[in-house]
Length: 54
Image (tube, rainbow, N blue to C red; front, top):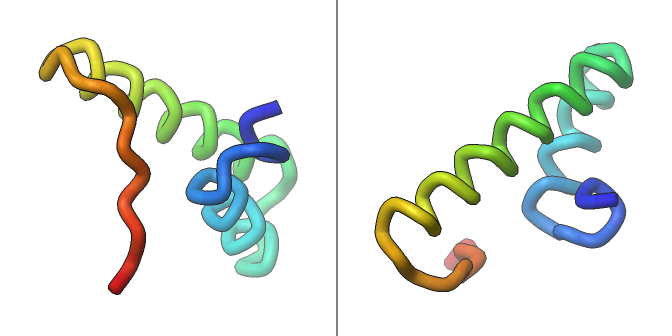
């Protein structure tokens, strides 16, 4: 679901697929990124703020 609705993770997932990774490898990388985001939010006790590239 996160691959469908989160633009950061969706972009990473599509980039990995374009680079020749299998769907499961790309999904695993997306899950890891989501876990890292969740850990950072909990660790710093802040809300999620997606980074917008400048």
